[in-house]
Length: 291
Ligand SMILES: Cc1cc2nc3c(=O)[nH]c(=O)nc-3n(C[C@H](O)[C@H](O)[C@H](O)COP(=O)(O)OP(=O)(O)OC[C@H]3O[C@@H](n4cnc5c(N)ncnc54)[C@H](O)[C@@H]3O)c2cc1C
Image (tube, rainbow, N blue to C red):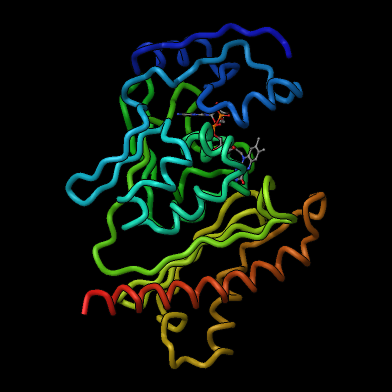
């Protein structure tokens, strides 16, 4: 590992000032489950590492106010998966967090680290896209809100400026009943990144949202406004046509060691159909519980 300067600021203003003055050769350290590996293998060679875990604004807190759930940047996967508010309103996000890595990884890995690493296989990305998350970023000119659909640029790159950091992630609590699920395919059980990661939601108005990752340079979000997917009496072949249109953006790499493009596309179709059925069933269960 090459040497680097290390700072652990205790205020957001200090962290932003450090980022601003040291430029793009700076890396932020949250749980370190991605960064430490990259420091060790030399694929990241920062001049400075800024530890963000002591910054109060980024603290691992999950709170709901005025119909918005705010998740602090340093919230770890284990806490996301166990949180009652997340499980109640954003069940697919809790599911995604519960399958990241292993117990040890989930106790360290943060939600901001997961999205800022910008891996196309990041498991929280599809549910955050489906639920319409907003990334709250802070920089030298104050804070700004970035819709998650504009956050991922390509593998390893987000729309954050080099002198910005993520403070929190906001999720609007769905206004109507919604059934949702997160599914993924890995080569084996246990520690493995997804060959396909996918989230589907269906709401009472019949709108289906589908987001998927690990099949291209960034996760993709699609929405079915035709209501065909959510319609139990729509013929299967009509549903397949809509699903196929939603998967048009998928472009799995031929160079991946994890799975061939053909396998990924087959799994994407399979998981898409399964997820749709489960989301519809969950919506029906919620309706039943309310009746
Ligand atoms: C064995 C193993 C298994 C794994 N399995 C999975 C898996 O199943 N699914 C999955 O999605 N991931 C998996 N990962 C990847 C990793 O655990 C996650 O991406 C994790 O969420 C990263 O969070 P972190 O806090 O550890 O990030 P760090 O390693 O601390 O940081 C990652 C990147 O994000 C940047 N960053 C961190 N915080 C901020 C912030 N607040 N603002 C701006 N930039 C920031 C850092 O500078 C760095 O570039 C695995 C990793 C390992 C080692």
